[in-house]
View 1 (cartoon, rainbow, N blue to C red):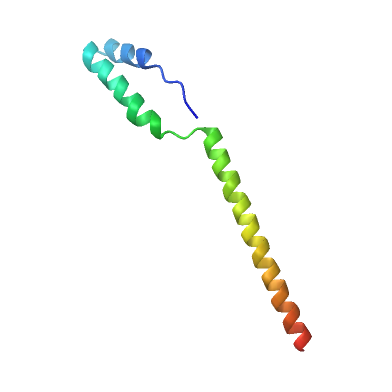
View 2: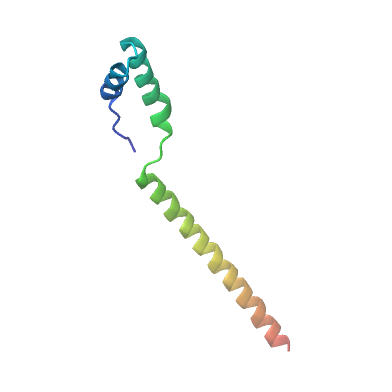
Length: 78
């Protein structure tokens, strides 16, 4: 998922703080290319957590069935 990033606004904020325009522009572009590419959005995080929750539920269900089967076998032996 793409995230909007205002390089012009970022550059202008740096210029207002006293950074020369060329450096401010380069910093804004570098931030867009290297930092923004690594950010995780809420949607990305929710999808990953949903997938992990499903995986955990399936593993727990499988373990429960295995335990139930083992207990049933033990009870039949007694």
